[in-house]
Image (tube, rainbow, N blue to C red):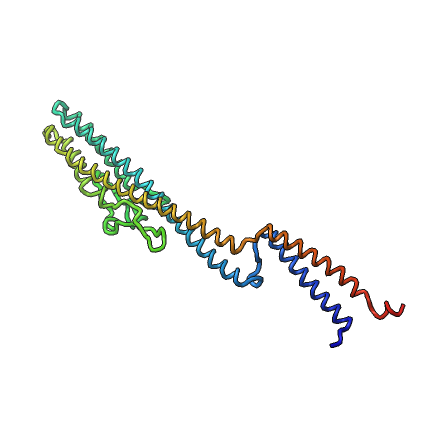
Length: 298
């Protein structure tokens, strides 16, 4: 096969172009920190990168859900602590009023305080987080409790029928993150408080009759304590799940980084080697391409 000057020139130019392209790839890797900037550069890395990034996004979403769940549980625990304080205040007032030395005017004054504390319970029961009612079960867009002008409290029946709000916090794991509205803010609670207020306003009520409400208040305090214990258990589980998600996210991110990110030290070495090869090809090409028939006829 006859090798012509044109063939040699074309081969040299083609190889120089390929070498320059490799040099450009290494420079892009150093500039972007990524092994590839186009899928065509390495289809395997590109396809695996999509899968790894999907895994990371998947875990990140669960982490956001776990954060939301923790926020709800913390707010619920805070609300229940306030309920506990209010009920204890009502209990102290009831103990005072059960003393037969109290006059009817004094008991009526205590009845007014019980009414105000009942309104506070309604306010707590309608606590919102991010515009959502945390004690309304699945019906988070509507308040759990409504109090009319007479002081009577009605409860959202849709919330009572759908008491659990669940959030997906991991693959195959969804857990309720709210307080069951049937557990604390019950119709019996507000009925008992209303009866207590009526008894305090009734001049004929005896200290024993008023004192009989203490057992009922204690029952509601126990219900509140049970709800707090349930919230605490859920918080512990959420914390464990969050810790697991953090570990998964670290591992998934590391795998994704190993697949996509360029090794800076190796890339610098490769670029320097490719630069030397390219410079050598330029030097060789300059000697070969400049020769022609005219050079021999001089």
